[in-house]
Image (cartoon, rainbow, N blue to C red; front, side, top):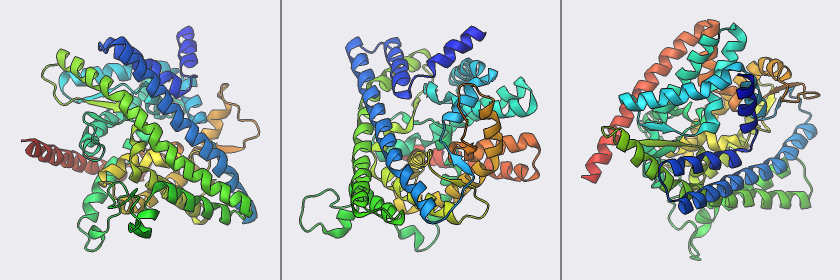
Length: 462
């Protein structure tokens, strides 16, 4: 068992843009994709994911010093450091539960496929650690392996269904059939988004406001008469303006300010290009995978392949929403009572977290930004609350070096709402029972929404 855990930890020590293409290449060969196409898809997938990671790393390298400088010049103090997801992943893979969670989640997915309880094929192995994290937390607090595995499988089932029920939104907005986003961090807010979109549709005035740069008339046009509105609609221009605003708030000099603006503008250009590679690489594989699964389960139709959110970065509204919310997250963190975290390492993850919600809002950036504000507030308060627990577990994890970091957390993954609810239910928190009822009601509403979308799609095709 120790040897298996050692090899498992070594495998997951690879970067996601190395490990995922290897898994996808093996899957492609298994579902009889021709070798050359499987190889080229794997390479394209690796290049696309690497491009996304490089763009994010470049973004963090530029924005982190600016945010830290902003904190210093404004005389601010935040005792908890946002170091991003690495310590949470390290905590998870150091848990004895992690090695068991992978075959159990895979087996559960196959069982649900065979019995018709889901149409989701969850091949995003990298993001399995998100399932196991809540199990590791419960295991650490209770000492019960059975309870830890039970909550791991529970949140996996939740993601299977949310992935399935959001596939119509991905197809409508991205033109990609049979795929949707997989991570817990993204699917966690799907019921909230579904309910809020319904509510916004029924508020007079608000239901008329829409800004979708993906469909903005004239956006990206060379027409001299396109106007300032169309120019500002371009993600590169928005990146430039946001970079300049952050640099000015941090009291940068002229040279640093202009460089910051250009750097953020470049990120907004590179992310969609890299995401396009991911989408192109995955399509022949997802098609072959669905065909093979359908051959073994002929009664299962319209199967959905769960993928990491990288392929959604090609949508302009996703990028624009994420960038605006990153700026707002910093402002909110500065004024929110009870907050102890200044978003840094996990800040770019807001693009991913909100990506599926943006598509559910039909690309409407206005609605997505409005919806994202309560999400940011909950991230900040929950990640602040759980920081002592994460810090204690990280210090007990040999693979993560926490010396000199003080209190640490992850802004988005450490503040995940559904994961926190499950952990609070285990602790017997009274508020959690009321929140569970609200979540179950929202899940039911999301299912009904999915059914309505599926019926509308069938009528359109007919």
